[in-house]
Amino acid sequence: MCGIVGIVSQSPVNQSIYDALTLLQHRGQDAAGIVTVDDENRFRLRKANGLVSDVFQQVHMLRLQGNAGIGHVRYPTAGSSSVSEAQPFYVNSPYGLTLVHNGNLTNSDELKEKLFNRARRHVNTNSDSEVLLNILAYHLDQTHTQHLSPQDIFGAIKQTHADIRGAYACVAMIIGHGMVAFRDPHGIRPLVLGKREDNGKTEYMFASESIALDVVGFELVRNIQPGEAVYVTFDGEIYAEQCAVNPQLTPCIFEYVYFARPDSYIDGVSVYAARVHMGERLGEKIAREWADLDIDVVIPVPETSNDIALRIAHTLGKPYRQGFVKNRYVGRTFIMPGQTQRVSAVRRKLNTISSEFKGKNVLLVDDSIVRGTTSEQIVDMARAAGANKIYFASAAPEIRYPNVYGIDMPTKHELIAYGRNVDEIARLIGVDKLIFQDLQALTESVQQENPAIKAFDCSVFTGEYVTGDITAEYLDNIAGLRNDGAKKKREKDATNLEIHNER
Image (tube, one colour):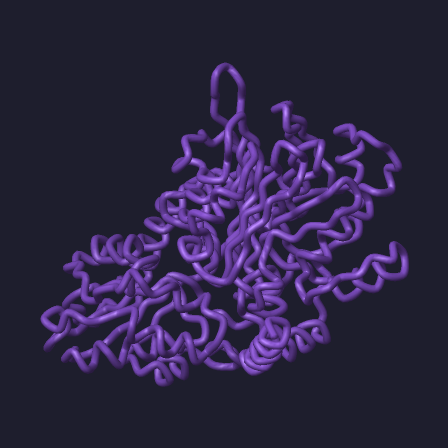
């Protein structure tokens, strides 16, 4: 998961992009980058590892001149955490092209071969985003025209859709022309369009979530549709066209469970309202199946599950309490790149309020259980705080399968629910009882806000991949490339390379 932003304005955009990225920081904490186009039609780029506030100092902001720009916060699911793989990426030909990407391509190896054999284009990193950029650059180059028309750009996007597979929400800038945003034919990753008026002229903004629009004074216009491309010239003219064959909206259900901020709207759905509905349905299931349990208090694992737990408590008629204090200066543990970092971060991230646990039968509520690392440690903390019995409720069903569309769940063997039933999972994380949300209840919680969404990508629960191209061989391959052991080796190699380059 990553966060992306693009703005075409009548005034400098560096501060607006910075502010928007800080609102999307929850989507990626590994690296950040901004590129702008200055008055002389040159890219101004700054990217580095770290949080937005660490990457961009005053000296960098002063250099990021221009009235149009794109930004990115990175959460690595492919490649390494080397700064060379931070976004935005750019190529000098044709025209000068730069791009940011949220998602994951499922045929990037095949595309690398095509690029070299067909276009003599070299991909310098392991990032699928660089592959995507070069595919788009190749098709733009085939127009053989000095000045691109909107139809030329849409034609290149159509060819790009035909070549690439997987999940992608992208924003690109073309020197001398404008900014184009496009989304994969399934709409797996979110992308919204906003606008604001300035001295009688309309300015446009693209972002992963609507909350990024709010902070810089843009109003939400609509979502970019699956397969659609929206092109905005640097003069503020806007064009849109459907560029995919048979597009169908199947957004990632995990956006609503965990990734998105509760104050965002994605594909017509209030994330906050969807989570309230999740809590209501899960509370009803607990009332049906655990009617004999003596639950004294309902406590959320902060923060994504707070709204869910509050609704569960209301449905059960039980007290709701905040039993954990969160250190807001520690990042989200699920999206940390290695197991060692995730384990150490949990203890630094949360601390218990012992009085809320001591001698009580506690129902802990979390949005999901992935590897089980966080859940096990949280249960240990509750025991140490004096809890009598600990029950655990997950707002999502059992996660049994890898994700290939941009979420860091690359190998089934790292998932605690893989090959295990509920009782076995409960014993591993150390709880007295464990209950999971039903998948139908989860999807209905989101559809209640927007019935027009008929299907979701629920592959982590079902093993059914909406792009239809995922084989057992592919899953075995990414498991070998992207498990925690492989990541650790790549990090070591990347560090050694950067040290060598500095010398």
